[in-house]
Length: 637
Image 1 (cartoon, rainbow, N blue to C red):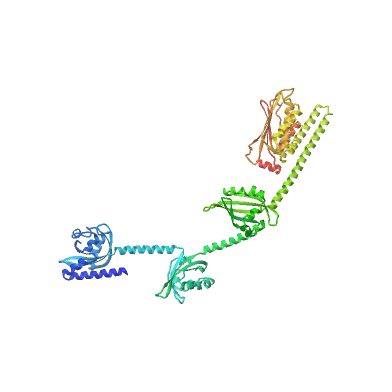
Image 2 (cartoon, rainbow, N blue to C red):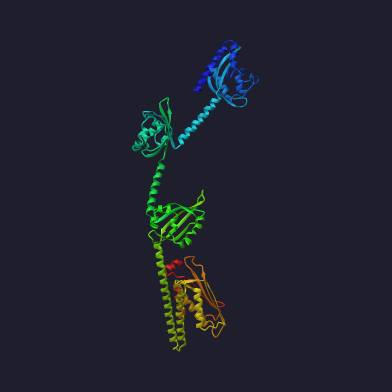
């Protein structure tokens, strides 16, 4: 509209100037000089200016002397010089042009937009071009800004996850739509054109139950001029139901006797689903907390060790006998029911863990409301408040009375079994000693030295087994034998048995602190007995002196299987060498046959090395009585 007015004004002014030009020179000069719009006269042939008015000079920033006699090209008016030839051609072919928008450079290099009209006139018998311009630079800037603003607004409205609508509501509750933003298609499934073409379409898609409850109040609030907000279900064009939140702001239009209403509608389907899921989750959690035989407590702990409760789950009545309301109403009630010694040894120290934000577990005795004493186990999680000077603590407690009773029963039962097992080892040891004593008595009547030696060997073997039961009886654990202690005791016994002269024969022992199960310790003890007996009997004849060494070390498994504990036993001496290195698998003597059988039982390996002395090297792994021999072989690889 504004552009058309400017164009009509310019055309009228141009016609007026043209008319004045045909009238006496004084009148033309007056109009020419006084015009608020730039006017110029230039020769048709060369385009040189012969006259311009003050508005022209003010617009372009030149003096009259700088313009007269020069062309628009000389002065650099044209942003695109080809436009000059086009305008000249149009004027020459048409005789006149009207309202053409052109951009020009001023002297200061600003760009101005002119609405240009021109026609051919005759001045002193010479063909000239009369040009009248209208500076529309500001209008173009405003138009560009407005266009920009409208584009941004359209972009915001089209990209926003909402619908902005405007309608008029009349006292008879009829309405007419004025505007729907482009978001309608994504939220409702319908274009703005579809909704505006059918006044009842939008209303017909609201869920009947919601339409019945919200529409009367909505109309009432609008007609009362109150801003209102409603939530309802809307059937999308694709058939799905969507939850819509609609905020309406009415503004009274007295002239039209109606309310002009602006509304913003947002799809809140996901929020509604999340709310439903949250309600369902809370209902499930509440059901769990109500039925769980446990109590969940949330409370605040202050730096002075004072506290205040925030929450007690319903399980408190089962565990403590008191309702959550009773416990929160009297914060000292809970602590007053704990045994005083547990307050001092369990409850008081836990504050340090709370302040350090360490998870901690408390086990204490609590006097139930019914008078019975209950064992309670509570796990505490603490976190310092970011804004206040206190710690937020969540505690989960459960009744472990039955567990404590079972522990006490098992402990008593275990003590009884330990006493019984000790008695069994003691009796086995005594019985073996009786057998050894019988053999000793029997050997006293034997005159054959070889037979007597065999009786002694048997006694030593029985003593080696009896010694293991003796060590188990004396130890704190009945499952494993301290091998270092056992090796020392057996060695001393054999030295005494064979009357070894410790002045000429030295004994060196280097045994790791190793404990073995009974299944491994017995064959180990019998092998140690046989090899040491062989050394004492044969390595140092006729009071010959020398050294004996015993080493037992834990060694890395050959297979690299860390599930198996492996050991190496070395029994060496620097006495008389063996006449030949024995082949244990084909041994002829009972002692070496027994060693071979025991090594096989241990699933170990034995070898003999002779150099400066003789060394028996036994490598074996601890037997696991829970596995079959096949399974043990498999573990060893």
